[in-house]
Image 1: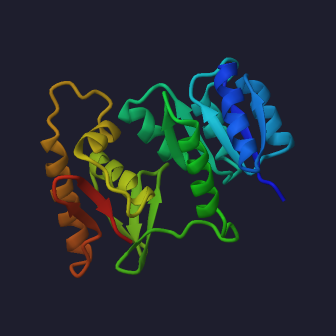
Image 2 (image 1 turned 120 degrees about the vertical axis):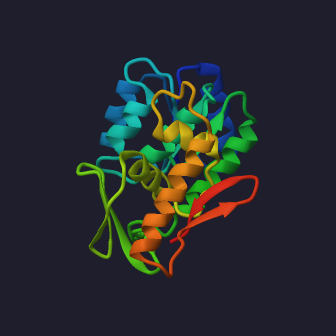
Length: 228
């Protein structure tokens, strides 16, 4: 059965081009130009994947994604003209599966759709909880507490936020700039090297609790990744 793709895009020409390219590859593509209308359609008849523009009339893309993620793991690719790293990070933290920035190649978007659908194929089980040395890592956002195998880690707010961002996407490499965007609301006069200081303290606290494990990996010249 053909996969159903919902395109939520208020630029009619772009939406139509995307729909045509997807249809050529065997998908069933529907377009909606208004965020509120899209939200109602998602609740009524969820597609197999959502192509979601960031800036929309009625209800913006981030609000739609936030609402959607309260009850659904539907694959979502954000499509936007806003390429700032904070927007990318915010979208991915909220649960977007991928990002495409305008201007883009429709063929690239189709390739991304296929890739995300392949990754979502074994949808029988929820994402695995991140671990430290095989022990489950629990991150309580409301209480701002992190525990490994039930043992609490005494973290500062910045260290907690840093661990939260890294552990939310194990294996993904984050640059210093991306991590800086994630943990500082106001970056005025904040050096990227501040991340090194927070990471050093976070690693030290993890090592004190679990001396045989080093879950935060440095990738020379690129950034840092959390390894479960």
